[in-house]
Length: 76
Image (cartoon, rainbow, N blue to C red):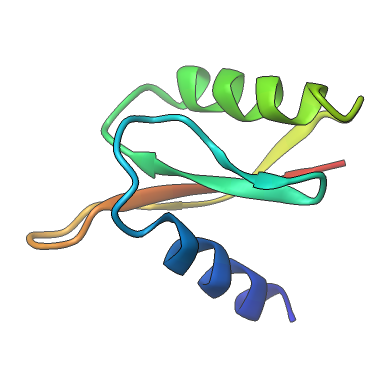
């Protein structure tokens, strides 16, 4: 189930620019543009704080030639 959610979140983020997270009260995904892990966490946590939850980074997908990386997170 977790792999399916991760895949769906990554597909939803395809083509998104910048490092702004997209998602809902369960979590989300943001493009990985080489920012520091701390800045990625801060952006994810700001997203989760909107629903009075804290972020937990669940996966960082490194970019490869031709694909954009992503940071996947859960709101708990």
